[in-house]
Image 1 (cartoon, rainbow, N blue to C red):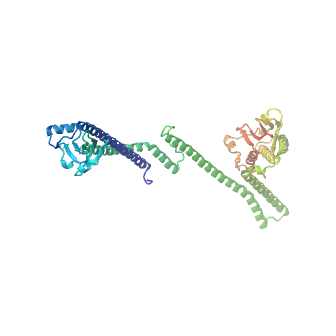
Image 2: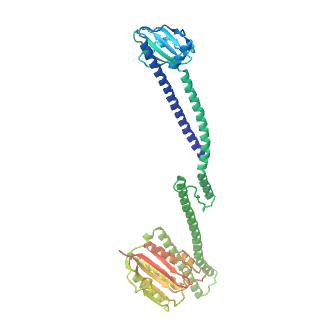
Image 3: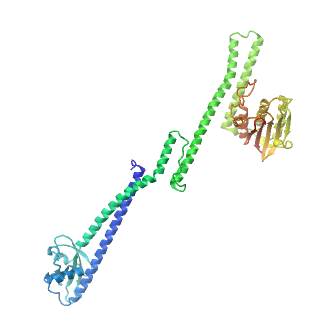
Length: 481
């Protein structure tokens, strides 16, 4: 069965059930009709024998075979439905009998079988003497002379009726089965059309078209409608998963390219310096000192980059394991950040306010790792100093807002576009990738590290900016209990 299509299997199952139903109905109808005819004949025979047993008061009439007038006898026997009437004496011997002239004497029941008929009025089947058919017989004891009256009728006509009924049922059932099978084939084909459309959609998706969806092939409340809705939901999730995987692979390729670039630059500087020394191109002590200073500077960059990458990897794998939280207040970090920024650029106006620039700085108690948060704030302050012109005002806001501790670093610099703001927290992302970075400039990991550390504390770093309107980086953390 598994090698047949769903349509063929459903049709075969339906046809089998239909055939079983028709066969059962035909058998029940035939059995009912046969029982009805037998009960009707038994009633006629029983009534007739009771009447004859009472009218034969002293002895049976002496008539045998067709001695009586056949023109009157045959219609009379046919009228009462008893073509054969037999009288038995007290010993069971046949005394006389009457039968229709239309019956051959050889087809009557044998005398030996007549003696087996019970005299309590129970109808029994008797075979014909020549085995040409069956007879139905009923016996009643005669009143007054001790004999027995037996009335019998052939079952040939009843058997023929039942056989004809069964033949008609077989022919009509076969025709109905063929007709309904043909109708069912087309109906199943039409009913399975939605599944074919689902199959075509699945084939298109397997071919690479992840945007395909199952169309509205059935009402939502039906089984096919539920299936189509579930498949569309699953396909949407698959498409999103493939899209996310492609984006992750693209980010990984970009990450590896950026790492290679960032590592290559200082390594080439170190290698070039050592090649100069090996070739004897540094004859003076001052030249050697300058070269060693350059090697130390590049090694420092490599060390910082490696440590940043290691920290990001550790934060990705087990962020809570990199923290040593203790009770603290963000106001301490805000005050230190103001001093650091003034040390970097004494000409820059710096204002210490509450969140959003409203009021004065307020308490912001948190349970966090102070060293890691200093790293976050240092990155935010360094970002403001590096990407705004000298003398650009900066505001540092600290306090509580919306049930969170908040520390803001807002500048009035050139700001960023929406596209730049979307990627500013990506690793190795720089708004100006072509700029010449000064010694010790970061590799585009500062803001990525800042956000990862904030998220490890259960908070986040957000950016609000517009081109020409400055930028505001906001660190939010859960308040200490």
